[in-house]
Image (cartoon, rainbow, N blue to C red; front, side, top):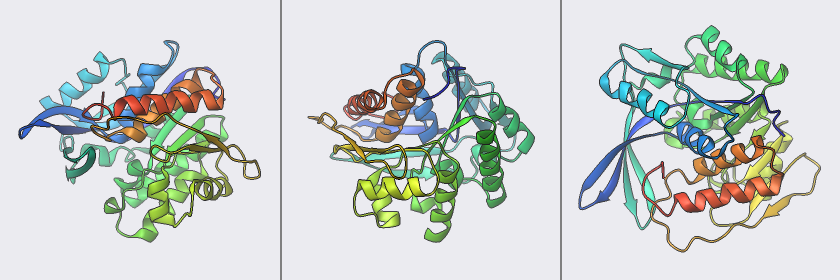
Length: 301
């Protein structure tokens, strides 16, 4: 369980989100997998926890609005750095019976440079107690910056910081499947909490069932593994040789938009875990939060 000194640092990208509202109308918002997790963690964590977002944005008016947005919703923006030569990426959500697909404009996103300053990154990580990142965080970085991020988090873990990681596998962000698998496993090796989604893992690694996913990640040397499986049971594994724990989740009657389903689960889980809740209670709260989110539109319900 997380020691309560009470700073969660979320490292990743936030983008401008254009989400459908019907009749060809789109609403502008802000979202990104790690930022979504920070958002839901902040909503659920006790007030003695500080939730901070580490990233880079531009120096333009849109980036200004994003920084103000984080402040307005209780997320500490002091670790968001400005890049005068870049701005925020943008994505558009397309829906088909609740299932979403995305169109991205992120090639020149400032967040791609978030690990470019090793000293700055080390300082941010040293000041937190629990740090969260994802496979997308790794995917958007250059090869040297991925190495910097992984090594910085590995060093922080040796100093007693806890690290949480969602592989959040997105093959289109990687140059090859081999590169993707290498860095996803590198991220998992330095994590105390791993939060994969079975469907992604089955496609990328050929896992036969959620237990196979849990045992594969546990064997890499990670800590607690929590495998999400859509509307199916959540599979948990605390140590490599332990029996798996299967936690049933309530079924959702109407799915409007699955955007941020996993992110909202992660945020609520880290909040409950950080607040001192037992494992199964934390999973139930996380699954209930995700069920509420997919009943509304957009990433931030």
